[in-house]
Image (cartoon, rainbow, N blue to C red; front, side, top):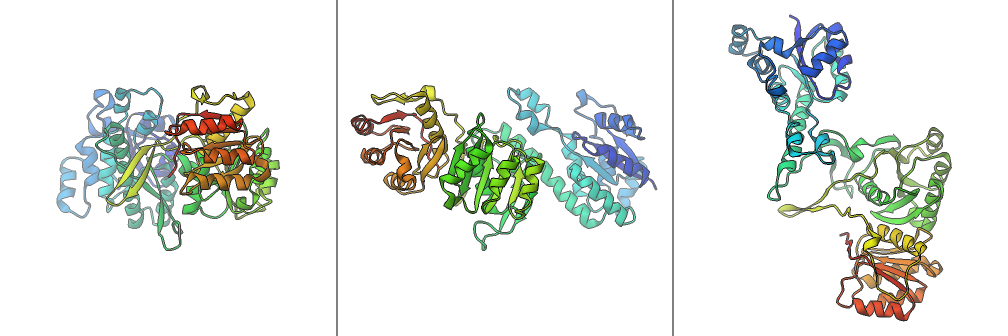
Length: 506
């Protein structure tokens, strides 16, 4: 008996090649809806439109196409239950052996600026999830594919098993189908929900060797139905990514996303930047970042906001690094990096887009907050000292402030020539962070800028900074004792700017 495949896809990647193999190599009949049917017909493939197969036209502007007993009966029929087979025969329904479905691009639609609720609602798929759930439920008797990445594997299953996909494959595909609809529904629920409900789901991307420590199991999940962020990155070389690699890569991405107009490089250790710098070229930016703290850079995570060229690749190979990520990598640079085969080299075209929310688990629940993605606006800053900033000082203050935002609180960052020269973070008091940053800067602190993620409750840190040679300070302000810090700055000839925005990072 000739088998029947139902193809109805929004993402048509690979569908023509799959359909051709089904018809020419495995003797399938094809039924399809709307745009998919037209694409198959244009490719010269024999296909029956769903409306012709069911005898019911598409109605309501395409909202109802595949919701019909001839479709769902053919999907849900159990081939080992006599009554099911009798029902198919009595209603002239053919059993369906393969369902290939992916869903309307709801997530892509709501990601567009200015999209209306009406536009979003029209991208909520109904027939697709129904077919995915039905065929996934009946995996004992048919196969379901919801991702173009499955097509070749399915065809190979047929080739290796006399034209029948194994039960193991069908069950695995069914799980992917249910995961696909779960992620899809989660995206819709999150879009429509108010603050009373927050849903979070993901599809397992891969099991990791372990978590932060070897005794902690860990898994990497992809949110949404379309790979974005690190799930969309391309790994050019190196070992598999670890839990800590991914955490540090995200910290590096957040910093590098602050800089778009100028070549920038950052080196991360334990989510904190040990070196961040701007340069006239990406190679210069990396060298400045590395030299900022070459000791801590050993075993670091590097993020670059420009393609890796040969000059930068040569510098990257001079020390041990865990990971390097950039928007792209030139061919010559890739050949150079290949000499360090263990370093993980990734490309991610979009390093600026990150999650809208941050989520942290606590006992009995979890906390959700909007991501700290506010853009620094120097026009809103307040110069509170007698000394006013030059254009160069203002640019340096902005650079220091952007980096400080991504250092663990209490955070202090000292910079010069758009390069970090001292970083103090994660201390229990701000005085300790100031001392660490200034000690690391050493003599380079003379004439440098200091940024603090929170206000100074006393003037002691201002005086310590001035004694080390700091000439300007940027901080949020907001302390009852701001006047004491401002008075000390004026007394010592420092420039002080208040941003009015705090950037604690716990």
